[in-house]
Length: 187
Length: 187
DNA sequence: ATCAAAACTAAACGATTGTTTAGATATTTT
DNA sequence: AAAATATCTAAACAATCGTTTAGTTTTGAT
Image: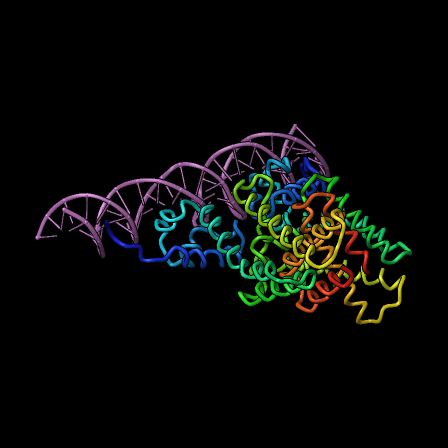
């Protein structure tokens, strides 16, 4: 064996994630990552292979952070109410980490173009349909929609969530609250 | 006087706008702009000063394209119904120009970070509040909300619009339809 | 204590970024 | 026709991009 790493990968990835979260993929440079992660370019490449690799790990880190909220939703016995709670929980999560950062997933979905990295695109679509599935399961708990109505409501809610996450950087908390309340008023 | 320009500024800006629309600000390079606009870098700088200048003009071009839909909404005698029509009109607009491009305004709002160009940020916030104002005026035409309720509905709708525009790149037309229908079902 | 291997520092890589400049070309006015 | 001037081409600018490499330092096993 040989020398030990002077850093913990999960720790430096969290710092990288925050940088990507704040600035987006393109704007974030390796130079900025070096500074924020506190390690040399060599170490970054040794651990994560490429800038894209750092970003993919950052997305996993972000998803893991959201997982607590999603688990809470999944384990709730309530239906629509628990989804509404998730919307508010997400706003708190987004706000508490650092005001105005919005959501790394939707930020990325909105930033990348058609010919972006396929692996990144897959992470985004997979996560989106996973959350949609959780919404659908929650809807089934409480009320008795028809199967088509269920899918429509699930579509409605996943897009509402996606929209809220996107909008959370642009709008005031009071406006976001109005949005959530109206979204669930007549569901 | 001297030699005449071999291009029309409004024409090359429209091409630039389409490039920004497709790829975002950061990903779009001067090299790509040269190719797409069909003119030399020198000419681009002579006409627009900088990459940022090209982008600002592109945003104006995009707003001008949306203006037809907004005028239609403003001139309509109906209230909520006309806003719903605007939502559908926007989807058609976004789709007909080139499938999956979404909205240049929300794309930009989602891409840029905190320390982005102030002028760009102003264009985004100004346009957003302008559209919100138009929504509010439409709401006043039909029903008799209280003033606070009116503002809440306006907040709801502008965020719903922002969200729809953001989501239009990620979701299927049928899903977006579900979103619009549910959005206006309970207004 | 020595040797081998992994992790570090730091410099350099070619490519590309946005921007500028020098020189050739074309057009209008005198 | 000639002088003036704006527009063009094309090359170069310094700076930064993501990535690699050479050389040094530290560690664990023999």
